[in-house]
Each structure stands twice: as C-alpha cells, then as structure tokens.
Image 1 (cartoon, helix red, strand yellow):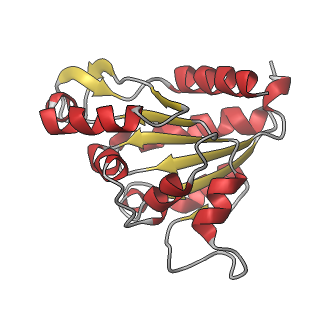
Image 2 (image 1 turned 90 degrees about the vertical axis):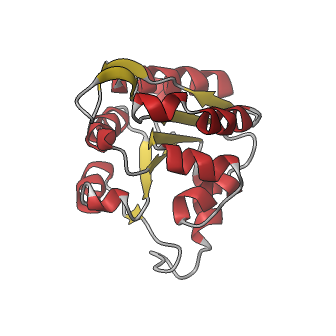
Length: 190
C-alpha cells in the first residue's frame, strides 16, 4: 500500500562501504514505489562493493560519487544535493564515515554533502560494522558528537550474523525499520 506522505519527497541516500550495501536496493525500491524522488551519493570505496549502475537503475537518477567529476557543471554538487533533500539517510554507515562526520572531515562527496546539510533537514544514520568496532570507545565518542546535531536519528544496529561470521551487535537495522522511521520523520516535518 502506498503512503501518500512520501509522494514527491526528496530522499537522499548516502552509501558508505559496508557489506550491508546490497540491502539498500530494497530501500530504494520502497521509496520509488511510494513515488518519492531518490538520489544516491556513494563513497569511492562503496563503488568497489556494488556498481553505481545498480543504484542508477533503481533510483532512476545519476549516482553522485566524486567531488571532482561533477554530473552537472552548472551546480556546486554538494550544496545542490544538501539543499535538494527533504531527508538524508546514511546507510550503511561505517565507523570510518561516522568518524569523519563527527570530526568535520569532508574529504569525499558524501561527507561534504552531510556537512553542508541544513540543520532543519533530518539526518538518519544506520550504522553497520563488527561488534568490536561498535563497542570501541573512540567510535562511541564519535557517535555522541553526531547525536548533538539537531534532527539526527541514529538507528542502532541489531544483533545478528556479521560479515566476520560471528553473531553480535553491528548488523544494520532492517530496511523496513529504516523505511518506517523515515516515513514518521517526514510525516512530522509536514
């Protein structure tokens, strides 16, 4: 069943290089089915796990990857994307990308867009990593810094089978949970 509140909403999805990257295909499909507009920003490392062509096909929009290979020469892409979005979803969010955001490091298009994101624009972060990384004191400090941002929502990882083959906390939240939280946030934003 379609959600009318998602029609024409501008969903910007940031993808970093976590193994859960393949799940984002289903998330994009859910938004497209609900007539949302979807754009994708990927890190260079994420493109080594899955081809941007997959996300271009699903989102019906070019995928943004590099600061120095702009899709459009008439726009400053990180500013354009940050202002275009009604909501930004970072999933999977790796420890590396979260650390960069927490410390104001904008060394790729994805982190630069997030730093340029207006404070009023909701930012959803769905971490995905090994349990030891999730529990690491330095990582937890970075997470505390990010939580200080207004309109920031952290969807905690779940316990489950991790890329290491172990069972533990660090598995990215399920796509339906990310989708439902996005719906609720956008409904409140009206």
